[in-house]
Length: 106
Image 1 (cartoon, rainbow, N blue to C red):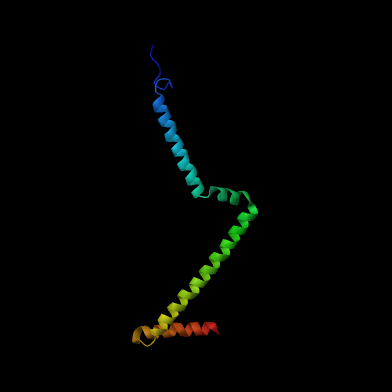
Image 2: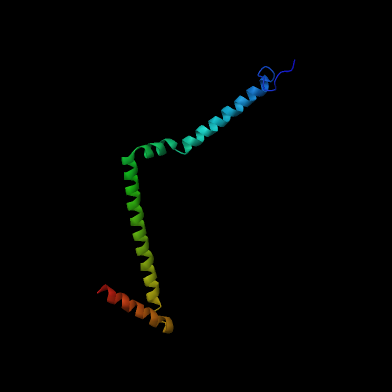
């Protein structure tokens, strides 16, 4: 009588090996989920107040960072441009540009 190839009585060692392999894989998945902090992500999306607060504070931080970054970059650029005012061709153009900026401040 022929038995089916997937019959547990036919290949007990192969089934135990497969179960051990699957258990190891499940342990890897569980470790990856813990590492990804999936619990915190689910709590964040299940609580509208927490999500709103998180988005609000991250928006403030981004806006502040962009403003400070722009201020620093433009300040450095203005300083570098002021060094070139004494050059003949470029200096006239930059001097006009600085003159327009001074007029705009008033």
